[in-house]
Length: 142
Image (cartoon, rainbow, N blue to C red; front, side):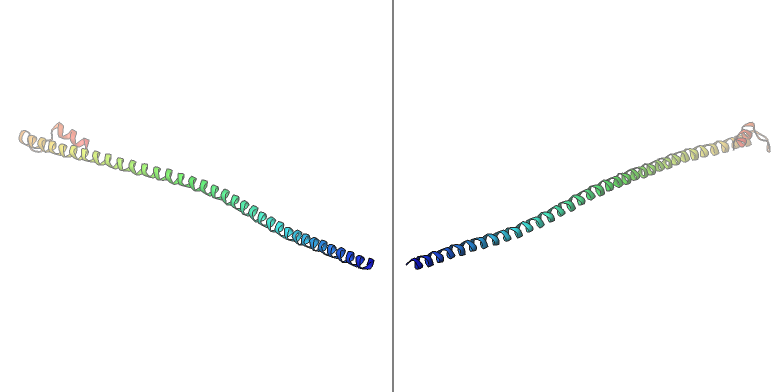
């Protein structure tokens, strides 16, 4: 009877020990799984940090390029404005020169007509081969 009780106690003890070992094994397995999950989390966090740093670098580069492009665009606009003003100025000068040329041509035509009238008057009034004072003055002006 005592032996039977001792054997039963030993069996119960071994079962409990076995259950404890299983529980310890399960805890160890969970600890290992948790360790791997933590490693995965760290890797993910590392990748996220790396991506964030890359994104920040890209953002800074994009801002720099945008500022550079805006500066170049302002320069192009200023250059275009200067060229447009220069063209307008040249056009205005050409228009003025054309007006002055027309005025000079009108004045020239008027002077030619006036000279022709004076010659006609002189030839009818003066003897041939003599020039009037007015003709001499107009010849000197040319």
